[in-house]
Length: 359
Image (cartoon, rainbow, N blue to C red; front, side):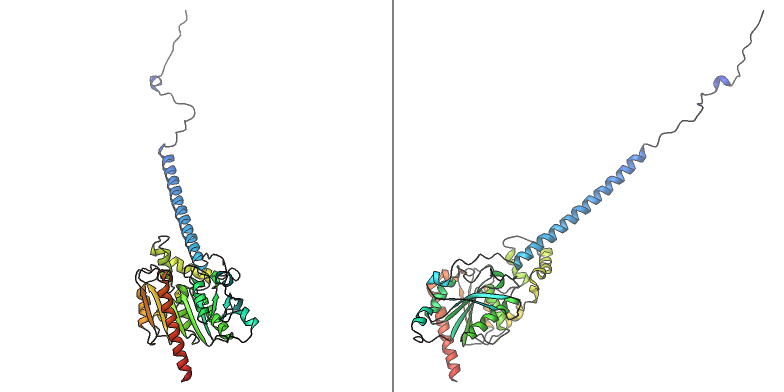
């Protein structure tokens, strides 16, 4: 008889089951959430920075384009000429600006009809009086709304030679940027010199809008101008150009004005801040000036025009402030009175110049 005995250690029955190799513990579940949050934050900051950089670049491009537009305004091409418009003989003329940087083209309308002069030489003495027209910004020598052809006809009948020319920004053939008067005054000086070369002793500059402001700038540089008629006088500067631009495209003064001022020299070669606006307004010009301005001129204040007139001491200088008159539309508002007043002024200037020659 056999007996089997089984023995079990007392503690063995209570020992836990331990695997041969320890199990790997999982990574904490909170770590991936922290890393992902940081990545999202970095992406968000980078996106905002990229968006701000893009906005900054777009702002620079936009204001650069605005500055370019100011320096290169759209001007419609010429549509006619004095022969077609008012049946008056004329010559195409080209001459260099006094600075030598640009070329000027225009029309010379002699007081003597060229056809009659050729058929009967010497029958009528050539006139020694010339009116040089100085057109406004964004227009050319025709400037129909003024209107140039009707005034040319008037002057021709009064025995004046007439010189009409395009500033560089208005030229189709000799394009140049607008400079607010810096180079334009050199172009006007060249036009005056051309009129003198054609025998003019008396020079009257008849300016409109910025062309009137350019006439005043030019008068600071020469004593060859004997009188001026200034219609809707506009003194160009960064601020006045910005204020006019703001009527069409509302822009904040900051940062738009400083940005445009900074970028204009890139396109025009010079700053509008270099224009002697204060000197132009304060100067006492040694010639008769007739200033014509409207009270409803939204582009240039009539108060500035009156201030310039009040600073003059010449006995013939005067101003005509047209009630409810608008910018460069004064002839169309009162055509007969406009002609009468300007013709009288020219007659008085002629008398003053003749008297000065006698003495």
